[in-house]
Amino acid sequence: MVSEILKVDHVLFSYQDLLVLKDISFKFYPGKFYGILGPNGSGKSTLLDILLGFKTPDKGNVFLFKKHIKEIKKTEIGKKISYVPQNFTINFPFSVDEIVTMGRYPYIKRFSLPTQKDFEIVEHVEREVDIFKFRNRLITELSGGERQRVMIARALAQDTPIFLLDEPTSNLDVKHSLRILNSFKKRVINKNRTVICVFHNINEALFFCDELIFLKNGEIVIGGPTGDVINEDILKKIFEVEVMLRFEKKLNCYQVIFTNGRY
Amino acid sequence: MKKFYFQLIFAFIFLILTVVTSLGLGFVKIPFFEIIKIILSKLTGIRYDNISNIHLSVVWDVRLPRIICAALVGASLSVCGVVFQGILLNPLADPYTLGISAGAAFGASVALLFGFNFLGIYSVPFFAFVFGLITLFVVIYLSSTSSGGISSNNLILSGVIVSAILSAGISFCKYLAQERVSVIVFWLLGSFASSTWTSALLIMISLLISFGIFIFYFRELNLLSLGGKTALSMGVDPNRVRILLLVFGSLLTGVCVSFSGIIGFVGLLVPHMMRSVVGPNHLKLLPISLICGAIMLTMADTLTRAVLPTEVPIGVLTALIGGPFFCYIFRKKQVGF
Image (cartoon, rainbow over all chains, first blue to last red; front, side, top):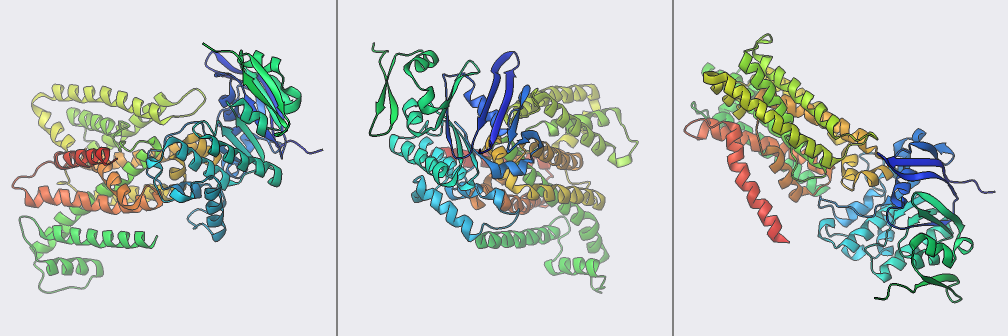
């Protein structure tokens, strides 16, 4: 039995009077791709903040590698979790290379220069997410999608056991979305990494995720292996839309078609 | 990195030349080589025969402390500018954004109004410093959320509110002072005229300590540019680092303001210019801003002391030159894209 890498235990969180997460419990295991799905304001991003240790739950606990997250030194977090934010602004003109190299900071001693190995990793991930060709340009001069790919490359360079992704493909075209989710999937399969990713695109989630967690109104409606939890009724209940679910033999996964909302 | 070392050394040599040149300028003109001799004799103890005592005292007791103070304050305000811009994620922040200067100015106004002098000539600087720090803590208190975090937007907003209140307080002090108002006005405008070796030493110590801490946290500053959450995922405790750097930045700003009054635009302009030369990496940006800030304020002070027909208050001069220049580069940047 593999032991869990990250665990939330009866977590409750509120902004002032607004209860955002109500009694959330879940265990995440290594070598799995998790998708978090739910309508706007269901608490997806807040849950990621809690997993990262950026927000402290009002009640309940978060355990990272069996240790309470508050007892782990912040410098250690950098070697265990990497995070890609949903939206961000960078006001200072760092070059693409500089930002991706920052992903290696947790492994480089203060005031030391990156080693050959660090440079190789940086170049590798830059090619992987297709930003190598503009690696010398400034982040402030890039488009939204290009900037997002830079932040993803930075997280990949950090090469941690756990990746927390908050809608990493929200600004990307189809080609780059698939390419990037594939990069993460490869790491899950080949390197036993854990990916926990918030999705809006249900079909992407169905294609890539081993397990899905459906959130609504701050509660986990259902969570478990993708094939077990997915059905038309749950999608109707969560998203309040009419759907048809088809099993695509070629892809070996379910895909969803939306059937309401015409005029 | 090689190119950067070259730039740094070039800037340092330029700083030394600026200091020596400005030592010779003023009411009494002193030749370049005599200045070198005077400095050498003071540093090494070797006695040269042909140095006039007047020149010696002009250089060593009058001009050098003033020039060194100007250089140190310029350096301090510039590195504080870099740090405040880094923490507040705002290229338009400066050491005064958080209201520290307004607090210090208010403290000084109160001390001048009531004529406190229990610490001799250090009474006004002392009051300025203490009020600057109190202001910082009020601003941090106002902007901290219930979960213990502080956001950069909250900090800027709190700084603006507190500054506005303190400005009203300063105006009230001026109003109460009536015919003695000129004392407060002149202090607020800033000057290096009364600089001594003691003030130079105090600024030097504060600068060394704060700069050491800033450069130690250069990576954290770089990572904070990506946002607090991302920085946390890369091993930075954003709140701890922000508070620590804010406190030391404010200490240094407080010391500067208390000795020299309010000197605007240096902390805004220098980091901005240096960022376009060496890039935003704080490992390079901090040292180059240190040196170029020193050059800038030394030049400005020499201009008002020795070149202009009457001594213009240094704070007025930096704002008059720096302001339009900043408008120019800011506009050029907008059009550039």
